[in-house]
Length: 430
Image 1: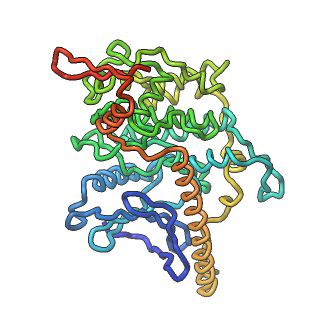
Image 2: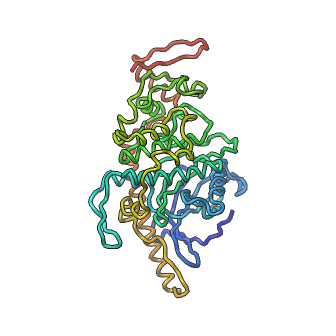
């Protein structure tokens, strides 16, 4: 479990090296020192990961570590972020060490909404910056994502948090890679779910309280990522609560029932709220790019099927008719998608002629640059948080409490009736 690689941390003398944060802890940028290169790496530090020592990891961290180790065996997969090493810190913390990827799909999609014009390529040629993704680009990105998922699923691993922010773009390899396995589930384990996928990307069965995570949970997320790429970076269903999220989905897909979704009545929270029976407006009404594109519409419809048993597998998606179309070159992805500030060298190559002074100077420059990267990342996170607060007011996310507040605010719009099983049905008149 001890780290087997040499790490040069960015001390506070240089500045704050934090590039991400969450309930788990923090992510910091650091430098991996090997005999042939100095390379940026990402350190994901998880607080309270161990109950006693490294042999007594908490269940979520143990599951994440087990999954990452399996996925990184024998060179791993080009579309899954590899785990380089693990080390312990302080009394109960653990640090996962990954390659550093400068940008993720969320940042790419977000930048598309606010940019235009041109950027200068290393060759001196100007390249136009699109404000929407071409089908060939979307298809190339989606293929990377699905290939990564197919690899995960073939190993008995369910990601459980598929969203653009967890799809990193490795600019050195020109590949999109799945990352952040903090909510991962193992199909071979009987451990119950310890977390929930980010609300706008949560599948309907999970919204209805299912504790049985299947690979279809990930495929719903793939459908929403595809929709977000088609819409220019806007989440398809952006609810402010579990109840609101379900309502937004049903507005589009129509109200599910036992005929359209086998087994829905067995879900824990199904029946706590009875939605108005409706046909739904359909995906093409909110994704205009589906018009006159039957093959694209078909794969979208299959991925965003309410019944998880009817969603396609990652393997079948790779052979879908729409996926047989044109793909973009890898170099074009960098030229068209990556803002200029992310086009940079993230390593210093070393050879026998690199003397001690040159190594020290290069390491110093990389540390200074790492702090600049961290400042830029934190600024982006702050802007995103402010945008989220404006567009998504904080609302409790448990269905029972949301139902209670809904009842209080709409007491004149509901009717309550007893059932044969002595339970109570609440029907909102919409």
